[in-house]
Length: 144
Image (cartoon, rainbow, N blue to C red):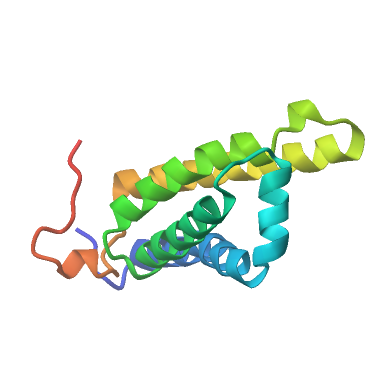
Protein backbone atom coordinates (compact mmCIF):
# COMPACT_ATOMS: atom_id res chain seq x y z
CA UNK A 1 0.00 0.00 0.00
CA UNK A 2 1.41 3.39 -1.02
CA UNK A 3 1.49 6.35 1.31
CA UNK A 4 0.99 9.98 0.27
CA UNK A 5 4.73 10.60 0.02
CA UNK A 6 5.35 7.84 -2.52
CA UNK A 7 6.81 8.79 -5.91
CA UNK A 8 3.60 7.64 -7.60
CA UNK A 9 1.49 9.99 -5.47
CA UNK A 10 3.66 12.92 -6.53
CA UNK A 11 3.66 11.65 -10.11
CA UNK A 12 -0.14 11.59 -10.23
CA UNK A 13 -0.25 15.11 -8.77
CA UNK A 14 2.28 16.39 -11.31
CA UNK A 15 0.38 14.65 -14.12
CA UNK A 16 -2.87 16.34 -13.04
CA UNK A 17 -1.14 19.73 -12.90
CA UNK A 18 0.33 19.34 -16.38
CA UNK A 19 -2.90 18.00 -17.89
CA UNK A 20 -5.03 20.74 -16.35
CA UNK A 21 -2.98 23.71 -17.59
CA UNK A 22 -3.91 23.35 -21.25
CA UNK A 23 -7.61 23.52 -20.38
CA UNK A 24 -7.44 26.32 -17.82
CA UNK A 25 -5.30 28.53 -20.06
CA UNK A 26 -7.35 27.75 -23.16
CA UNK A 27 -10.55 28.69 -21.34
CA UNK A 28 -9.08 31.95 -20.06
CA UNK A 29 -7.74 32.85 -23.52
CA UNK A 30 -11.18 32.32 -25.02
CA UNK A 31 -12.44 35.18 -22.83
CA UNK A 32 -9.33 37.33 -23.32
CA UNK A 33 -9.47 36.92 -27.12
CA UNK A 34 -13.26 36.83 -27.30
CA UNK A 35 -13.71 38.63 -30.64
CA UNK A 36 -11.09 36.65 -32.54
CA UNK A 37 -12.40 33.40 -31.05
CA UNK A 38 -15.93 34.30 -32.19
CA UNK A 39 -14.61 34.90 -35.71
CA UNK A 40 -12.68 31.63 -35.77
CA UNK A 41 -15.69 29.65 -34.56
CA UNK A 42 -17.99 31.35 -37.08
CA UNK A 43 -15.51 30.59 -39.86
CA UNK A 44 -15.93 26.88 -39.02
CA UNK A 45 -19.67 27.24 -39.63
CA UNK A 46 -20.76 27.12 -36.01
CA UNK A 47 -24.06 28.66 -34.95
CA UNK A 48 -24.91 30.15 -31.54
CA UNK A 49 -21.24 31.08 -31.27
CA UNK A 50 -21.44 33.30 -28.14
CA UNK A 51 -23.28 30.53 -26.25
CA UNK A 52 -20.82 27.81 -27.31
CA UNK A 53 -17.79 30.02 -26.70
CA UNK A 54 -18.79 30.90 -23.13
CA UNK A 55 -19.87 27.32 -22.42
CA UNK A 56 -16.60 25.92 -23.78
CA UNK A 57 -14.49 28.43 -21.86
CA UNK A 58 -16.28 27.76 -18.57
CA UNK A 59 -16.14 24.00 -19.10
CA UNK A 60 -12.40 24.14 -19.78
CA UNK A 61 -11.70 26.34 -16.75
CA UNK A 62 -13.92 24.45 -14.29
CA UNK A 63 -12.95 20.98 -15.58
CA UNK A 64 -9.29 21.97 -15.57
CA UNK A 65 -9.51 23.25 -11.99
CA UNK A 66 -11.29 20.04 -10.90
CA UNK A 67 -8.40 18.01 -12.30
CA UNK A 68 -5.77 20.40 -10.93
CA UNK A 69 -6.96 20.29 -7.32
CA UNK A 70 -8.27 16.74 -7.44
CA UNK A 71 -11.90 17.61 -6.72
CA UNK A 72 -14.47 15.47 -8.53
CA UNK A 73 -11.52 14.60 -10.71
CA UNK A 74 -13.13 11.74 -12.60
CA UNK A 75 -16.18 13.83 -13.45
CA UNK A 76 -13.99 16.73 -14.57
CA UNK A 77 -11.96 14.40 -16.78
CA UNK A 78 -15.08 12.87 -18.34
CA UNK A 79 -16.60 16.30 -19.04
CA UNK A 80 -13.39 17.48 -20.69
CA UNK A 81 -13.21 14.25 -22.69
CA UNK A 82 -16.76 14.80 -23.95
CA UNK A 83 -15.79 18.41 -24.81
CA UNK A 84 -12.50 17.69 -26.58
CA UNK A 85 -13.79 14.97 -28.91
CA UNK A 86 -16.11 17.13 -31.05
CA UNK A 87 -13.77 20.10 -30.68
CA UNK A 88 -10.96 18.06 -32.21
CA UNK A 89 -13.11 16.88 -35.10
CA UNK A 90 -14.42 20.39 -35.87
CA UNK A 91 -11.29 22.51 -35.43
CA UNK A 92 -8.48 20.14 -36.42
CA UNK A 93 -9.94 18.62 -39.59
CA UNK A 94 -6.60 17.96 -41.29
CA UNK A 95 -8.37 15.85 -43.93
CA UNK A 96 -9.94 19.04 -45.38
CA UNK A 97 -6.72 21.03 -45.92
CA UNK A 98 -3.45 20.69 -47.82
CA UNK A 99 0.27 21.25 -47.34
CA UNK A 100 1.65 22.87 -44.20
CA UNK A 101 -1.87 23.59 -42.92
CA UNK A 102 -2.58 19.85 -43.09
CA UNK A 103 0.60 19.07 -41.13
CA UNK A 104 -0.24 21.65 -38.46
CA UNK A 105 -3.84 20.45 -38.10
CA UNK A 106 -2.76 16.80 -38.01
CA UNK A 107 -0.26 17.63 -35.27
CA UNK A 108 -2.98 19.41 -33.27
CA UNK A 109 -5.39 16.53 -33.91
CA UNK A 110 -2.87 13.97 -32.64
CA UNK A 111 -2.01 16.17 -29.64
CA UNK A 112 -5.70 16.19 -28.73
CA UNK A 113 -5.90 12.42 -29.18
CA UNK A 114 -3.03 12.10 -26.68
CA UNK A 115 -4.81 14.47 -24.29
CA UNK A 116 -7.96 12.33 -24.65
CA UNK A 117 -5.85 9.35 -23.58
CA UNK A 118 -4.66 11.27 -20.53
CA UNK A 119 -8.21 12.30 -19.64
CA UNK A 120 -9.45 8.73 -20.02
CA UNK A 121 -6.62 7.55 -17.80
CA UNK A 122 -7.54 10.10 -15.11
CA UNK A 123 -11.23 9.23 -15.42
CA UNK A 124 -10.40 5.56 -14.82
CA UNK A 125 -7.75 5.89 -12.10
CA UNK A 126 -8.87 9.00 -10.24
CA UNK A 127 -6.79 11.77 -8.75
CA UNK A 128 -4.56 9.77 -6.45
CA UNK A 129 -3.79 10.27 -2.79
CA UNK A 130 -2.72 13.92 -3.00
CA UNK A 131 -6.18 15.27 -3.80
CA UNK A 132 -9.37 16.62 -2.32
CA UNK A 133 -11.19 13.55 -3.65
CA UNK A 134 -9.15 11.41 -1.23
CA UNK A 135 -10.60 13.35 1.72
CA UNK A 136 -14.23 13.28 0.59
CA UNK A 137 -16.60 10.83 2.32
CA UNK A 138 -17.77 9.13 -0.87
CA UNK A 139 -14.27 9.40 -2.39
CA UNK A 140 -16.00 10.23 -5.72
CA UNK A 141 -15.20 6.79 -7.08
CA UNK A 142 -16.61 5.47 -10.29
CA UNK A 143 -16.38 1.73 -9.99
CA UNK A 144 -15.62 -0.51 -12.86
